[in-house]
Amino acid sequence: DGLGRETTAFLRRRGFDVVELGDAPRREETAVEVRAGTEAYARRVAAALGVSDAHVTTQGPLADYDPDVAVFIGADYAQLVPFQGEPSDSTD
Image 1 (spheres, rainbow, N blue to C red):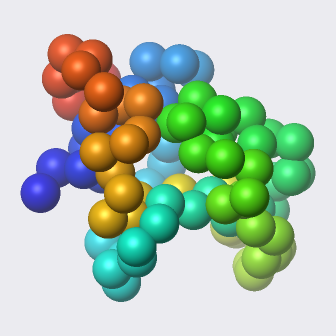
Image 2 (image 1 turned 30 degrees about the vertical axis):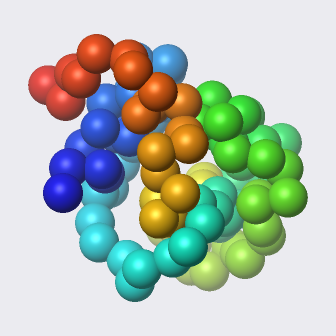
């Protein structure tokens, strides 16, 4: 619980505009998917989270209104930068 809020707060503090937060089916590994944006931007998001380029995929654009990228937090979340001891701040 709260992984999405923690990740959202983390990304916003780093200047990323997070426009939506929701639940997705369970995944073993975290992934960043290119939607309407560029692969370079997705790699910037992935790098901020500590996700390797191998977990950046291109899926889109899926619709005209898609966000630039989608982040799917996996069961490996404890290895991500936001969960490596940075103080919690989900009020951003």
